[in-house]
Image: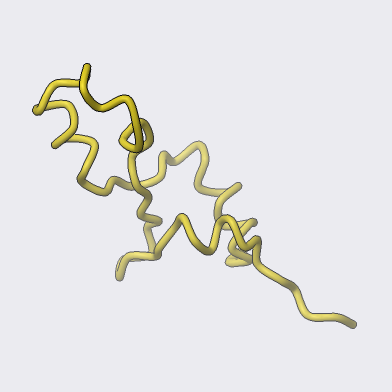
Length: 65
């Protein structure tokens, strides 16, 4: 039986934390930045955790489940 492969796109976008949560980057910080406030851009810089509702789908893409 062939090996299970992770989705390349998911592999690049998500990281596991030590406690088993999944970290992700914020969207909307790549272009058209002149109209966005400094506060908003700074908030988008920091990583966040994947929402509980999406966690199962991401784990499936990473072949963790």
